[in-house]
Image (cartoon, helix red, strand yellow):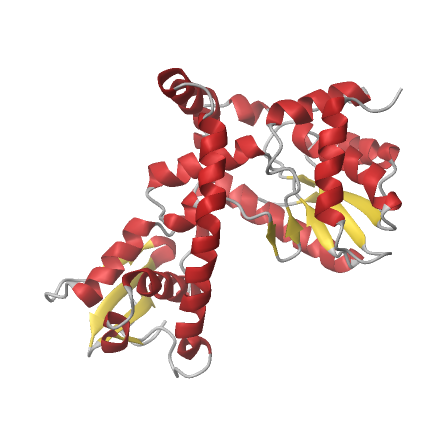
Length: 336
């Protein structure tokens, strides 16, 4: 008997994602052992050899739950049993929330750093992530609630650098069904049911409430909105990147931006230039919101002698001598 409908859907999504890789390339699957990444790993193990590719796997032990090391060992054994090679368990240290933008963001940064190391050491052409359509909808809703701007509403890209997300058009129910069809028993992460985490609240409370109030299809609509906005956001990002070339090449101090130049930029471009400059100066990427950028923008467009703007990561933005400066707290203007 051939694979079930769910297995076929996941395999087809992976096949489409890997179609442009060269024969002999290595792809690594990031796998927590949950249903999404486990279904992805099984599909990659099946599809990759048939495309002339090699497939390996990486699981990351964040050390945040009792028994996490043992769990990582079980996942690596499972990945090897699926035929993935090489397989690695990477152990990371997640900084406390006080030094990051919350526990979820801290764990995410540590996880991607470990995946980057593994990809470089193995020479992987791509790293596959198991985010589904449901994850995309949750990401859009979280970004909307946080006022994070158009970039967050565009959700997660199908590809960014070496990272590929083959399952962004696949529902979470499908990955669970695929595991069942293959006889795989996924790990149930207790954090996914822990309402201390915003994503768990969105998954189990906010989205069901929206579906109840507005009718079925809200999850698909949120994901569809992300896809529609992504092309616009990427175009604006490219234009902002071109405009801010002086930040990378021409300016002797990238923290000091001329307000006359900034005020002449279209608002959407100026916001992106200011955001990128703040991140270059040391603001944590995930902690900088649209509200922060709006307050920096006011130093250009609504200047009335106001004080500095406090930013994440102990940074400040202030205006002086016709420029916007990004400095660490306590540093003199013009120095970071």
